[in-house]
Length: 308
Image 1 (tube, rainbow, N blue to C red):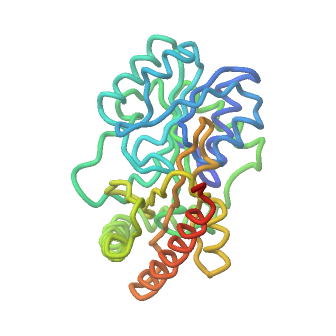
Image 2: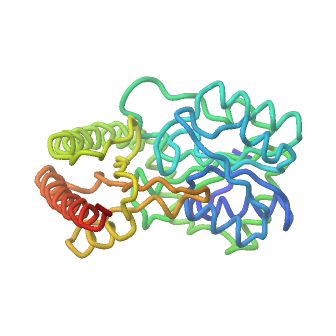
């Protein structure tokens, strides 16, 4: 318990980790593509960020060693890579830990969507594999509700006091009344029961969305394989402007997120994040129908502008 620092969410945990562990100009690794909230923190702290590409096994540690072996920290989403969705393989986890041990570097583990795995057994957390080198970030926003604004950092014991001090400087502490209610909720077993319930509920909604997409997707679109989380990644044909498509979808009442802006490397692959957590079956199916209509319209406009 002494290693747990309560935060207002993962974003604050990322900022605290940067302030406690690093100095302006320090080199760090971050995934490519990556969570925009993370890259904003790294830029604000003035760090020298090396974006490491991800593949089917997650962050490519070998590429990181080629680009910047002397990095002071690696920021990763090993449970469910944001935004693509693959978990970090055990081989890559071990390689990342070996690098951190050898270079006395830190691993900042954002345990994004770890509770929402629909098939198979989850990998062990990085923090569980090497507690002395890993700063673990978690949040209750996804499994309870975003406006709760409660998360946590699990820091290595020697750093716990520094993290607590950084937390106090930011805004003293999170609201205590919500913490007491949540602690009682957890102690009485309700949180575990709630997670089991929503895991089943979201699995059903995910299956509905996948089925609707697979029946209707135009040629050139494909779904990224994933068995975790609250969104599906839809890859778009090369050359598609996913930002413009997302804007058109929003005008039609559908909220999707373009992923090409999350890449540092070029060319960025176009795709859309499709969330399913808060929608009923009819809403998901209707949204797919409208999205497919927009995709076909985009396809026609692209073909009309192609040279003969």
